[in-house]
Image 1 (tube, one colour):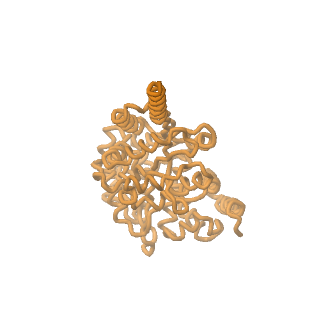
Image 2 (cartoon, helix red, strand yellow):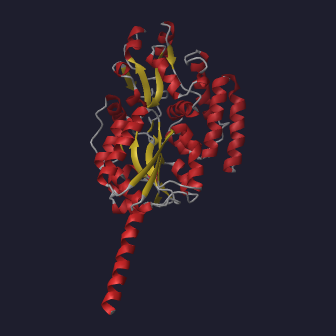
Amino acid sequence: MKRTIKTVMLSAVASAVMLSGIAQAGTLAINIAYKGASQRTVWQSTLDEFKKANPDVELKVAFVDEEAYKIQLPNWLSSAAPDVVTWHNGERMAYYASRGLFEDLSGDWVKNNWNETFASSKEASSYKGKQYAMPTVYYSWGMFYRKDLFEKAGITAEPKTWAELLDASKKLKAAGITPFTVGGRDAWTLAGWFDYLDLRINGYEFHQKLMSGEVPYTDARVKKVYTTWKTLLDSKYFIDNALSYDLDAAQPFMFQGKAAMMLMGTFIAKGFPAKQAQVMGYFQFPTIDPAIVGAEEGPIESLHIPSRAKNKVDARRFLAFAGSPAISAKLAEGLGSLPANSKSAPPEEPISRIGFEILSNTKGGIAQFYDRDMTKEMADEGMKGMQKFINNPAAIDEILAQLEQARKRIYKKS
């Protein structure tokens, strides 16, 4: 009788263990931001590989367009959170980490040896000494251009200085080609212009102080960024009605030969039509002040586990999988970016390789990007100001005064 009771008890314990295992390896909910079919494809392929290697995990994946994703993420994190989300490092990550909405991954950094393989990304992945992100890829920003249109306009070399860029723009305009296309409806595309002008005119240290709210927007150095930008607008070097177009709608101006250049991150390269990719070039944003040591944009993409996630066990399995050298390289190739994992193979795609060389040789610092280097509230105000500026370049003083009032309110500094 005793043996029978003992057998029943052991069976019950075994069943509980089995059920516990099933619960841990249950459904893994992953939300992924993407821009274009090529980005969705590489993520889907990665998910398929994970599923093949982990057949006990059921995947529930939501692909959301990047702009809609930015709006929806706060609601996800504060209510019915998925188990894994894609997002960005730097201030964008810190915003949610500081509010207790991202899981502390410091133990995973030790366990998976990420302190070594992601050493260059650790600072941007950290908040108050703890890590809340697993870097996936990073990418360069620079000037895409049509080689054939440059040749048509008589431009024989990629511009390396501001004077050369203005000369090239003048020649393109004379040839009936708009020098620059930009999707101003997506305000962050304008932020790329502001960042590079500020980095080239005022340098990395000043730029970071501005990003952290330490510099008034009425400072003459900030105004100089806008007045320099205004010279391009006054010369009609940008497409008309730029605020009517988002990134996807702005690119065809370049594909159709109506515009020659676009300042953008290398991640768009994978989405170029095959015919256009053959004539596309990429160069570093030109020097404006030779006395300023060149700095670049090198935003880092990342994966996070929401603190309210239900399946953190399998979420950690997925991050460990995605953080391997092979998967990091695969994501980088498919996303037109560079692998964050230092053990990954370098990219083969030509434009990504140029971007890799630019970032590898940067001596003046690497910024995360305007709306990733500052608080979200101030970044939103700043980008609204940029849209107002594009709409009315003569309103610089009014716009900067409004931004200064916003800075005082948000940072509570005089």
